[in-house]
Length: 339
Ligand code: KG4
Ligand code: ZN
Image (cartoon, rainbow, N blue to C red; front, side, top):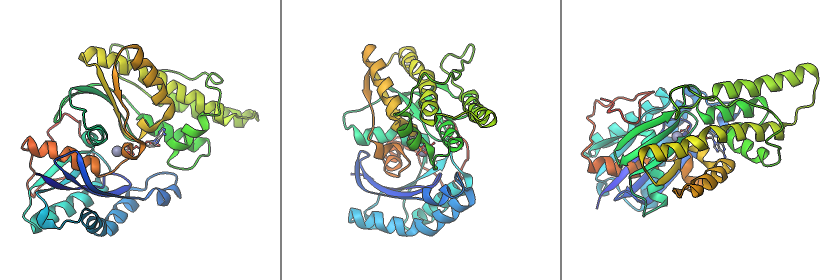
């Protein structure tokens, strides 16, 4: 039996969770700072770091209390060390190191995106690699061949903005509250997706790669143009047209990625994986191609530490350990070693 306490602080959620043998989550606490950053229309890195600093000790106590455990019951401490806001990551890494040192526990470094994928192992006990996963979050959009629990190959990724970033920026110009993805999802339900003509970028020679910055700019230009000529903008139609363009970019590439990797199982992960329109489109298209899909519950799509605690178990099994000189990294590919 392996019990792991995991810390997540890569962006604006401070989270601590405890896993047992990977997939069983004994406790998971998440403190979102979203309300605070909403005042500024986006995450303010220094505020994020300071808030992590304030709450991380109490959240750890709470996770242990809820699991009815003490530090003596733990086999290891895990922490998200990349990628993310560097100041935010350093708070978690610093705390995890101190906790590991004080309790003589091994330290396991976990890649945040690997954690997002692992959220699916918690939700679906029968899910095992290999499979293809779409990871779509605020900072990343990629199609990954998950060959094994700790073996990944990037099949395609965005060349510029992440899908979530585009959702958030578009929400902002439409005057929706931060974080904008969920608000855009809701608004798009009432809109006509054919109303605004928006671009779908293609990367020549790299069919599985994506680009969302031109689409984002087109939405911003549409809003500004309407303002300048005094034309009334239909926000719901624009949200729906934007979402359709995002789906048109992602869905065919997801199918091609499964075909290219020779996988018949498809999984989604990350905050944008919560999008209802994207789920509907992916569901329909994968069914047509006889691809089995796993869509995690919304509670496991956003940032949390349960997913980190789960992935930490597989890293632990694979012999991954960090020294007390572990550093944090703002960027790191999912298939990099990071040392
Ligand atoms: O994975 P996540 O919680 O944090 C990162 O690691 O980035 O993803 C956050 C992103 C934000 O851009 C947010 O607007 C987006 O996920 N998001 C959504 C939805 N819910 C959250 N985007 C589209 N539709 C949603 N329903
Ligand atoms: Zn995330």
